[in-house]
Image: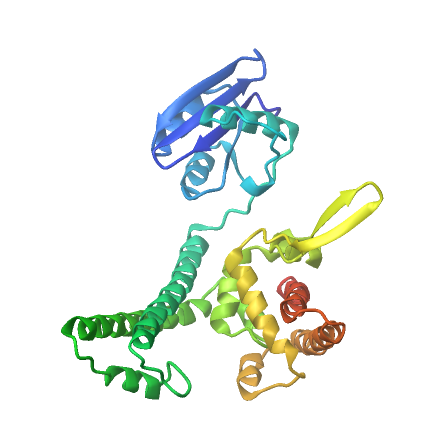
Length: 358
């Protein structure tokens, strides 16, 4: 059945600006709503049916999408980074944004994002919370280190080991305020470590559950990717099969070079850095392991137990290929980070191949 109404929604936490075009009459209707999905969905249901509607992905999440779908409305969530914008446009408002979405939706010029199930979204939120805690812990450690450095306290040895933590706890200062600041910083670190351990236990259990485990089990067969990293990558990508080819995944992750063309000249620049920052960082961190010669350590061997031969063979080929790639680039004088990112791009392709294999 042909679409009779096209609707674009500019969604914010406390308001939604809506625009809808009636195909039969050509009339453009505009409405403004407060927060919440219910009044928006009710308005969409009153338009000439069937309705095709969309809004850009953002911090408000997917509640409106799910409510509209439940009401039988064809709703799309759009990737804002890929929404075409008029060059030189100086006038911007929520109403104009909603109207622009209507026109682009009718023209088929928008790119949808894949909406995860509520369960997958909840698991992804938990994995991202763990990543945010990692940043909090790093900042807390920096604060304590800087405090000690200002007072001439420098630890000789590996930092943040159990021995180092005992050394920190034994530091004493002449002024009570400094002593309190030191104790407060150390207490914050201990609290964050306890929270991280609790999250790690919960995520490790979650990784073993359906529908996550089959893909997680394959991803963690690769060097540099443990259970938690495999789970986080899987939750960020969500549906590996939506990418028809491996390079499409690498492009979605923002690991492909940007390209500037003018006439007959084409110049490659830095990577695009689109898509999930978290997934991209996990891959870059994993790629650093491939700067060393291929090997199958005890921990990796345990993770690979019981997995199909084709997965293990692919993981072993990845070790050889990515090691050769980084070695070749370093010999050509490329910076270490360039070699690592190149390896991360190819690692993403290897992961796609095992995640989508039958």
